Image (cartoon, rainbow, N blue to C red; front, top):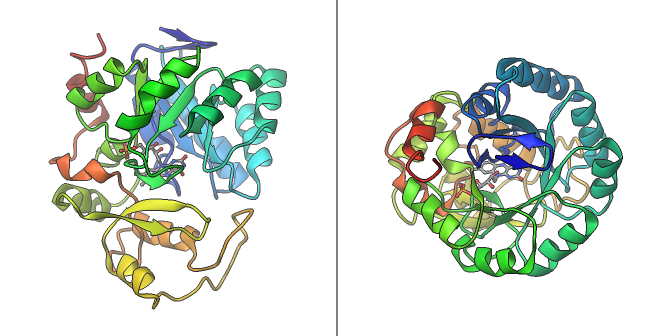
Length: 310
Ligand SMILES: Cc1cc2nc3c(=O)[nH]c(=O)nc-3n(C[C@H](O)[C@H](O)[C@H](O)COP(=O)(O)O)c2cc1C
């Protein structure tokens, strides 16, 4: 299947997951299965970003599949991270958590497909007009920062009908029935985050993965992120403190975001979550994380979706 300049076998995007939850090991494994693997390029050093892209691309070799980089528009070094990723050989750039017009110019000049993450018909149409190769439509049921309160199931079809570029549906895709539901709404494929955290290749700690397996329905709540956006995370001591107003404000700020309200440090909390610190960390997850019962290989994820994408 061709999408712009990309040659892939299966229209599954492994969503970018910061900080350092999706790096070369996970993204490379996804691309080797013929999908699109995304390295999370937000709030990491430029040298590390470069070397992760090179490692993932080497692992992919000349097989069908693609390695991209996800960068949040909200990060202070957004343009630098985009250019560094392209210099290092990223096959595409996926950007969310805000809207950038400038990114499409860079994509055109450097002949790299741009997939913006959008949550409204307006942003989807504007993206198409500015030159997006495809779009990811993400609902309020997804993991991480959110652009809407509406579930993916309620917004994908309207956006598919409003544009003539490929649409990937994101939010709530855990199994093949969910993927089929996205295709029935007119999407060409899916982007998944939550399912890929619970894989052997994912770079987060085992404690993070086990939290996913043990989560029950209703354990994911919406919080107000210091980035000025709502976000879905698993209930935790940190979330309790944030909601009750007792969470310590950000202290050692490294100015990773263009705008921050300093209610906490998302950078620090994500790193703590990544390392499995269940007392202090933040654990982003989609609302349907309760459906995950096991930690499996990326190969197994793809084989569970084979009946839909063959
Ligand atoms: C732990 C975690 C971290 C995430 N980090 C980012 C990120 O850095 N940038 C981004 O655009 N999306 C991020 N996302 C969203 C995913 O890329 C993806 O769109 C979303 O998880 C899809 O919904 P699902 O979780 O229901 O599969 C994150 C999601 C999770 C679960």
